[in-house]
Length: 255
Image (tube, rainbow, N blue to C red):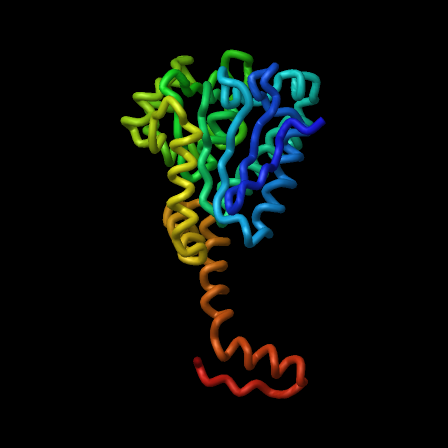
């Protein structure tokens, strides 16, 4: 049975974590499902924005299900579990459409890293954030010491990862990690997404790419994607393709 659902609501895609008995902790199957859903979303021009939600009201996601990785060898743990999760979360971060994580409850470890891979986050007042990996003898593996460092002060990340402290919603709002704290975070996120889908989708996509290139989120690919988009609209590109297909010398005019 699927524990990560893709639900289409008009121009908004909802990705819903559905493993509430384990506080929506990630399993191997959920990672695989997330990867597939992200590819489907990216290729669907009718989808203009994405919201990530979770079942239940205790937790958004408490990270990786320990039973999913506890028996892996050191090589399997590093090569597959960590790298696969990192690759899939990177795919979420680099999605061309705007994304919001709805933190209806606690976001710990991989759950916090999942939220960090979204463009915005909305949080319930009683939810909290944490990086508890050291308590079970591991380290953050899905960008908790990398991408998260661009979104939070270094000292706050150390407070969570090295001292085991939880960060409250009010503090997360004060540092700018979340866009809003609301008793109904889903409704607050929906209002933000409604505004996003009223904007030019192409302008939003390119602007997101520009911001990511500046911030260092897959900078090389973003720069080349922007350059390719610009050249694709040129007369020279059309002439070059036509000349190749007609087996003749192209006559470029610089337009």
